[in-house]
Image (cartoon, protein in one colour):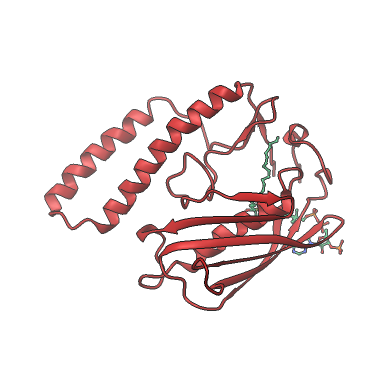
Length: 222
Ligand SMILES: CCCCC/C=C\C/C=C\C/C=C\C/C=C\CCCC(=O)SCCNC(=O)CCNC(=O)[C@H](O)C(C)(C)COP(=O)(O)OP(=O)(O)OC[C@H]1O[C@@H](n2cnc3c(N)ncnc32)[C@H](O)[C@@H]1OP(=O)(O)O
């Protein structure tokens, strides 16, 4: 197994320009996903749209990475993970979340979950809540200054969470050596939590305890 960050020497300004353009495309694709789920147009119209979508995919495939997007960084300390399943700016499958880190050890996010994230009728899928919680908790544990991986995630689903606006909050509860315990919750803004989470995040034994991003390019062999 190898976990490696990719050093790519692209100026930050260029990364940010690309990210802006890519994010707009991603938003449009998310809208396409929502429109597809909720469309009631006739079957032949669905078929005509499919043909156009296939043509668009072919245009994007004109130049492709050989595999997933990975996590990349430049020597100015800018990193980008556009394929990430939760926060990837190029990933329309990812919920539209933007996490704010208050200070080291605490974070929050507010977003709206639409039809693409449904589990029980009209409710957020429990796995989507877990996905969002795992990410905000992982980022909180890491603080972007050390590599952390989810070891154990415990969730308590207290009440159904309706689709619509949601708020996530996370904070570090305690730390001991390579173990960081994070508490988090997701719910309707201003209401009691729908899901409460406790997670044990681990700094892998092969990773430094605290290090700047640049040296995380080393690999784990195991
Ligand atoms: C180049 C720079 C780029 C810059 C990028 C900037 C930022 C990007 C970086 C980070 C991003 C920020 C945040 C991350 C955001 C989101 C998080 C996403 C989270 C994930 O999506 S992540 C995928 C799911 N996750 C896994 O894929 C883990 C698979 N697994 C392993 O990789 C190993 O298993 C590991 C590493 C967990 C442990 O391995 P290890 O060798 O380090 O530790 P070892 O086994 O020796 O155990 C030492 C002590 O931990 C205890 N322990 C071990 N495992 C435990 C467990 N699972 N639960 C509870 N306790 C556990 C033992 O019981 C012992 O305890 P004691 O010392 O008390 O005996």
